[in-house]
Length: 121
Ligand SMILES: [Zn+2]
Image (cartoon, rainbow, N blue to C red; front, side, top):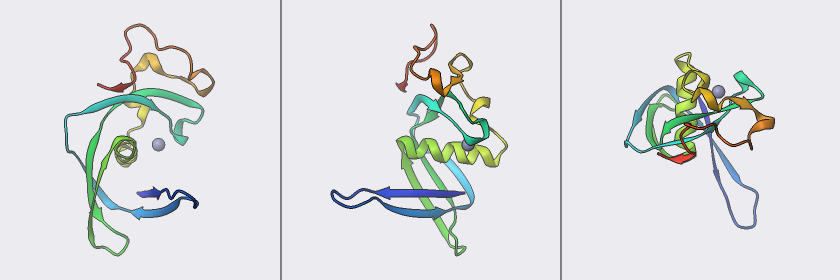
């Protein structure tokens, strides 16, 4: 699993750090969840709403084989869950709210009646 962490400075281009996590183990660290659109290059051109935990911790080994741990919230936590799902053969379409599945061209259309609203649940 490769992760990028960016840091923005006011006047410079973003700094990008590459994280390598070998054999990642994901743990949810709160009960807070949020619903938001996700996409994936494995299902290119489509998006769907997926409910994900807002706070997670991933532990594993770094590129030098040393134990490491990443605590993440929000979008970064969503990405970690998405990528860890891949390692178990799960795609976002396996967890999506089915009636929200759509092409990227239709992302601005309103959600169908009964779908959870976007944002924190
Ligand atoms: Zn993916």
